Image (cartoon, rainbow, N blue to C red):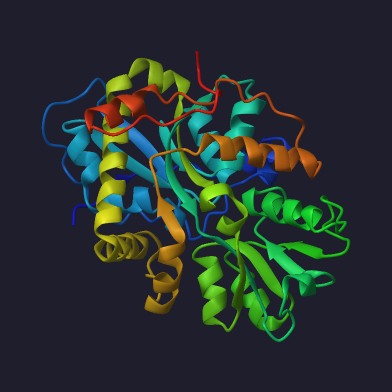
Length: 368
């Protein structure tokens, strides 16, 4: 299948350079920085207003829209003669920093770093322009130590990072149970241990954690080690839907190259349609891309267990973004943010209309 060239972004102190909360509210990427080892696919057709569009995403199943759209050449087909360059990231702060620096133009990213990137810049650096995925987050536990939800009290549960999307969700769930935990230290009725997704399976195997509230494929990696799913986060949300991956764009690029943005969104919409119509082929495509990016595909047992829990959707589920922000405020990790203008769904709705599909809502948080 066609593959694209990735730009190697400079590494540095991106996360450290941002305020602590931006680093805390990172997306929970899984996988290593992509190696520059795949051949370039030539852009074919009429060039749009930009020679190149630079897109960032994570080597993570909740970013499968990007994985599949890249691997299958769907994005490049929509871009025609405009070249697609891809970079991969393991954390939200570094992707936001790349967007701010102009190293990427468009990114697939979780809700928490999108919220913080927007609020810390006082609404000047990015817009959310579409959805990508919902779900794919689970509470998995050692069945010998935890048999019921009530048994979680007093146990050691891992989350990916202080204040990240899953950490906020778990803290909110703990609060709803009436239990007390200090958000910063993680100490209280439950011990919340912030553990990088890459090492959580080893922490589970060693017995240093009793379970984890984590995204896919980390949850299914734990299941492959004998853990059991105690709770699927989707069950806590209306219609079992909540945003896990958005599409963002720099406001400068959106203003200067709206035709390119629309082309990427067309690629995303067509990719999601293909994924939903061809789940087995899409799963194989995503895993092939992961192998190219990380050097190792996911095992069949892991990906087969993980894939069904992720829903691929063009709708950014804006109301759930506001709810996630409210949960972070409730936990004491975020001051009440002003999210007015965080969305600009006009390009997406234009694409959806052309496809004969209904518009999606920005929940009153759209750019004027």
